[in-house]
Image (cartoon, rainbow, N blue to C red; front, top):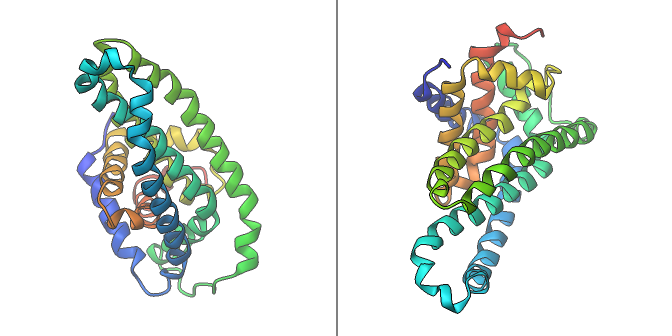
Length: 244
Protein backbone atom coordinates (compact mmCIF):
# COMPACT_ATOMS: atom_id res chain seq x y z
CA UNK A 1 0.00 0.00 0.00
CA UNK A 2 1.45 3.36 -0.98
CA UNK A 3 0.32 6.95 -0.94
CA UNK A 4 0.10 9.66 1.69
CA UNK A 5 -3.14 9.86 3.70
CA UNK A 6 -2.56 13.57 4.34
CA UNK A 7 -2.41 14.15 0.59
CA UNK A 8 -5.81 12.49 0.35
CA UNK A 9 -7.19 14.90 2.96
CA UNK A 10 -5.64 17.78 1.02
CA UNK A 11 -7.62 16.80 -2.07
CA UNK A 12 -10.86 17.19 -0.12
CA UNK A 13 -9.79 20.70 0.91
CA UNK A 14 -9.06 21.57 -2.71
CA UNK A 15 -12.46 20.21 -3.65
CA UNK A 16 -14.06 22.66 -1.24
CA UNK A 17 -12.50 25.67 -2.99
CA UNK A 18 -13.31 24.30 -6.45
CA UNK A 19 -16.93 23.84 -5.44
CA UNK A 20 -17.23 27.54 -4.58
CA UNK A 21 -16.02 28.79 -7.96
CA UNK A 22 -18.46 30.73 -10.15
CA UNK A 23 -20.06 28.49 -12.75
CA UNK A 24 -19.82 25.40 -10.56
CA UNK A 25 -22.20 26.47 -7.82
CA UNK A 26 -25.23 25.57 -9.93
CA UNK A 27 -24.27 21.88 -9.63
CA UNK A 28 -24.01 22.25 -5.87
CA UNK A 29 -27.28 24.05 -5.14
CA UNK A 30 -29.81 21.27 -5.81
CA UNK A 31 -27.84 18.46 -4.05
CA UNK A 32 -27.29 20.89 -1.16
CA UNK A 33 -31.03 21.40 -0.75
CA UNK A 34 -31.50 17.62 -0.83
CA UNK A 35 -28.84 17.20 1.84
CA UNK A 36 -30.43 19.78 4.12
CA UNK A 37 -33.93 18.29 3.77
CA UNK A 38 -32.87 14.68 4.35
CA UNK A 39 -30.41 15.43 7.13
CA UNK A 40 -33.02 17.51 8.98
CA UNK A 41 -35.59 14.71 8.65
CA UNK A 42 -33.05 12.10 9.77
CA UNK A 43 -31.98 14.06 12.84
CA UNK A 44 -35.59 14.74 13.83
CA UNK A 45 -36.59 11.09 13.43
CA UNK A 46 -33.46 9.80 15.19
CA UNK A 47 -33.95 12.09 18.18
CA UNK A 48 -37.46 10.70 18.66
CA UNK A 49 -36.70 7.01 18.12
CA UNK A 50 -33.19 6.29 19.39
CA UNK A 51 -33.84 6.09 23.12
CA UNK A 52 -37.06 4.12 22.54
CA UNK A 53 -35.22 1.59 20.40
CA UNK A 54 -32.45 1.09 22.95
CA UNK A 55 -35.01 0.54 25.71
CA UNK A 56 -36.79 -2.06 23.57
CA UNK A 57 -33.63 -3.99 22.76
CA UNK A 58 -32.35 -4.11 26.34
CA UNK A 59 -34.61 -5.98 28.81
CA UNK A 60 -34.77 -4.67 32.37
CA UNK A 61 -32.49 -7.36 33.79
CA UNK A 62 -29.70 -6.25 31.43
CA UNK A 63 -29.83 -2.59 32.38
CA UNK A 64 -26.53 -2.93 34.23
CA UNK A 65 -24.84 -3.72 30.87
CA UNK A 66 -26.04 -0.57 29.17
CA UNK A 67 -22.84 1.34 29.96
CA UNK A 68 -20.92 -1.21 27.84
CA UNK A 69 -23.46 -1.90 25.10
CA UNK A 70 -24.58 1.67 24.53
CA UNK A 71 -21.51 2.95 22.61
CA UNK A 72 -21.28 -0.23 20.52
CA UNK A 73 -24.98 -0.17 19.71
CA UNK A 74 -24.88 3.56 18.95
CA UNK A 75 -21.95 3.07 16.57
CA UNK A 76 -23.69 0.22 14.74
CA UNK A 77 -27.04 1.97 14.38
CA UNK A 78 -25.48 5.30 13.48
CA UNK A 79 -23.38 3.55 10.84
CA UNK A 80 -26.45 1.94 9.25
CA UNK A 81 -28.44 5.18 9.31
CA UNK A 82 -25.38 7.14 8.21
CA UNK A 83 -24.81 5.07 5.08
CA UNK A 84 -28.52 4.86 4.35
CA UNK A 85 -28.64 8.64 4.34
CA UNK A 86 -25.51 8.90 2.17
CA UNK A 87 -26.85 6.52 -0.44
CA UNK A 88 -30.29 8.15 -0.55
CA UNK A 89 -28.62 11.53 -1.12
CA UNK A 90 -26.33 10.09 -3.75
CA UNK A 91 -29.16 8.36 -5.59
CA UNK A 92 -30.95 11.68 -5.92
CA UNK A 93 -27.88 13.82 -6.56
CA UNK A 94 -25.98 11.38 -8.83
CA UNK A 95 -26.70 13.13 -12.18
CA UNK A 96 -25.65 16.51 -10.77
CA UNK A 97 -22.53 14.96 -9.24
CA UNK A 98 -21.49 13.54 -12.59
CA UNK A 99 -21.85 16.96 -14.23
CA UNK A 100 -19.98 18.65 -11.39
CA UNK A 101 -17.10 16.18 -11.82
CA UNK A 102 -17.09 16.87 -15.57
CA UNK A 103 -16.92 20.64 -15.11
CA UNK A 104 -14.18 20.45 -12.47
CA UNK A 105 -12.10 18.27 -14.78
CA UNK A 106 -12.60 20.72 -17.66
CA UNK A 107 -11.16 23.49 -15.51
CA UNK A 108 -8.26 21.40 -14.29
CA UNK A 109 -7.30 20.52 -17.86
CA UNK A 110 -7.86 24.09 -19.10
CA UNK A 111 -10.21 23.04 -21.85
CA UNK A 112 -11.64 26.50 -22.24
CA UNK A 113 -15.35 26.98 -22.95
CA UNK A 114 -17.73 25.13 -20.67
CA UNK A 115 -21.14 24.09 -21.87
CA UNK A 116 -24.16 25.64 -20.20
CA UNK A 117 -26.29 23.68 -17.80
CA UNK A 118 -28.45 21.28 -19.78
CA UNK A 119 -31.49 19.75 -18.06
CA UNK A 120 -31.93 17.19 -20.85
CA UNK A 121 -28.34 16.02 -20.39
CA UNK A 122 -28.93 15.71 -16.66
CA UNK A 123 -31.99 13.54 -17.25
CA UNK A 124 -30.10 11.35 -19.74
CA UNK A 125 -27.48 10.68 -17.07
CA UNK A 126 -30.10 9.68 -14.52
CA UNK A 127 -30.46 5.97 -15.34
CA UNK A 128 -26.71 5.16 -15.77
CA UNK A 129 -26.01 7.07 -12.56
CA UNK A 130 -28.64 5.12 -10.62
CA UNK A 131 -27.28 1.80 -11.93
CA UNK A 132 -23.84 2.80 -10.70
CA UNK A 133 -25.28 3.66 -7.29
CA UNK A 134 -26.92 0.21 -7.07
CA UNK A 135 -23.60 -1.47 -7.83
CA UNK A 136 -21.86 0.49 -5.08
CA UNK A 137 -24.69 -0.29 -2.67
CA UNK A 138 -24.38 -4.02 -3.39
CA UNK A 139 -20.60 -3.86 -2.89
CA UNK A 140 -21.14 -2.12 0.43
CA UNK A 141 -23.86 -4.48 1.69
CA UNK A 142 -21.92 -7.67 0.92
CA UNK A 143 -19.03 -6.45 3.05
CA UNK A 144 -20.84 -4.47 5.71
CA UNK A 145 -23.14 -7.26 6.89
CA UNK A 146 -20.35 -9.71 7.90
CA UNK A 147 -18.51 -6.84 9.56
CA UNK A 148 -21.58 -5.86 11.56
CA UNK A 149 -21.88 -9.44 12.82
CA UNK A 150 -18.51 -9.01 14.53
CA UNK A 151 -20.16 -6.52 16.90
CA UNK A 152 -22.05 -9.45 18.41
CA UNK A 153 -18.85 -11.30 19.38
CA UNK A 154 -17.59 -10.33 22.88
CA UNK A 155 -14.09 -8.96 22.78
CA UNK A 156 -14.02 -8.84 19.00
CA UNK A 157 -16.58 -6.03 18.97
CA UNK A 158 -13.91 -3.57 20.14
CA UNK A 159 -11.79 -4.38 17.07
CA UNK A 160 -14.93 -4.31 14.93
CA UNK A 161 -15.44 -0.63 15.80
CA UNK A 162 -12.04 0.24 14.36
CA UNK A 163 -12.59 -1.93 11.30
CA UNK A 164 -15.95 -0.28 10.73
CA UNK A 165 -14.37 3.19 10.69
CA UNK A 166 -11.67 2.06 8.24
CA UNK A 167 -14.29 0.41 6.05
CA UNK A 168 -16.47 3.52 6.15
CA UNK A 169 -13.59 5.72 5.00
CA UNK A 170 -12.79 3.35 2.12
CA UNK A 171 -16.43 3.19 1.02
CA UNK A 172 -16.77 6.99 1.02
CA UNK A 173 -13.68 7.30 -1.17
CA UNK A 174 -15.09 4.70 -3.57
CA UNK A 175 -18.45 6.43 -3.61
CA UNK A 176 -17.17 9.82 -4.73
CA UNK A 177 -14.24 8.72 -6.88
CA UNK A 178 -16.81 6.92 -9.02
CA UNK A 179 -18.16 10.15 -10.51
CA UNK A 180 -15.06 11.38 -12.39
CA UNK A 181 -14.08 7.81 -13.33
CA UNK A 182 -17.56 6.91 -14.59
CA UNK A 183 -17.38 9.97 -16.86
CA UNK A 184 -14.56 8.09 -18.62
CA UNK A 185 -16.52 4.82 -18.80
CA UNK A 186 -14.34 3.13 -16.17
CA UNK A 187 -16.26 0.28 -14.57
CA UNK A 188 -16.63 0.00 -10.80
CA UNK A 189 -14.35 -3.07 -10.66
CA UNK A 190 -11.64 -1.16 -12.57
CA UNK A 191 -12.08 1.83 -10.28
CA UNK A 192 -11.31 -0.30 -7.22
CA UNK A 193 -8.19 -1.71 -8.89
CA UNK A 194 -6.92 1.79 -9.65
CA UNK A 195 -7.65 3.19 -6.21
CA UNK A 196 -5.99 0.26 -4.44
CA UNK A 197 -2.67 1.27 -6.01
CA UNK A 198 -2.62 4.25 -3.66
CA UNK A 199 -4.73 2.85 -0.87
CA UNK A 200 -3.35 4.99 1.96
CA UNK A 201 -3.92 8.23 0.07
CA UNK A 202 -7.43 7.14 -0.90
CA UNK A 203 -8.15 6.09 2.68
CA UNK A 204 -7.00 9.55 3.87
CA UNK A 205 -9.41 11.12 1.40
CA UNK A 206 -12.28 8.95 2.65
CA UNK A 207 -11.41 9.56 6.31
CA UNK A 208 -11.48 13.31 5.74
CA UNK A 209 -14.95 12.99 4.16
CA UNK A 210 -16.08 10.97 7.18
CA UNK A 211 -14.79 13.72 9.48
CA UNK A 212 -16.51 16.42 7.43
CA UNK A 213 -19.81 14.53 7.63
CA UNK A 214 -19.57 14.62 11.42
CA UNK A 215 -19.29 18.43 11.58
CA UNK A 216 -22.68 20.17 11.90
CA UNK A 217 -23.58 22.59 9.07
CA UNK A 218 -20.43 21.75 7.08
CA UNK A 219 -21.76 18.25 6.55
CA UNK A 220 -24.33 19.74 4.17
CA UNK A 221 -21.45 20.56 1.82
CA UNK A 222 -19.79 17.15 2.09
CA UNK A 223 -21.24 15.61 -1.08
CA UNK A 224 -20.28 18.31 -3.64
CA UNK A 225 -16.97 18.92 -1.86
CA UNK A 226 -16.12 15.22 -2.04
CA UNK A 227 -17.10 15.01 -5.73
CA UNK A 228 -14.90 17.99 -6.63
CA UNK A 229 -12.04 16.70 -4.46
CA UNK A 230 -12.28 13.22 -5.95
CA UNK A 231 -12.10 14.75 -9.43
CA UNK A 232 -8.91 16.63 -8.59
CA UNK A 233 -7.45 13.42 -7.14
CA UNK A 234 -8.47 11.47 -10.25
CA UNK A 235 -6.86 13.93 -12.67
CA UNK A 236 -3.60 14.28 -10.76
CA UNK A 237 -3.12 10.75 -9.45
CA UNK A 238 -4.96 8.20 -11.56
CA UNK A 239 -6.06 9.41 -15.00
CA UNK A 240 -2.70 8.69 -16.66
CA UNK A 241 -2.82 5.10 -15.40
CA UNK A 242 -6.28 4.36 -16.81
CA UNK A 243 -7.10 3.06 -20.25
CA UNK A 244 -9.20 6.10 -21.16
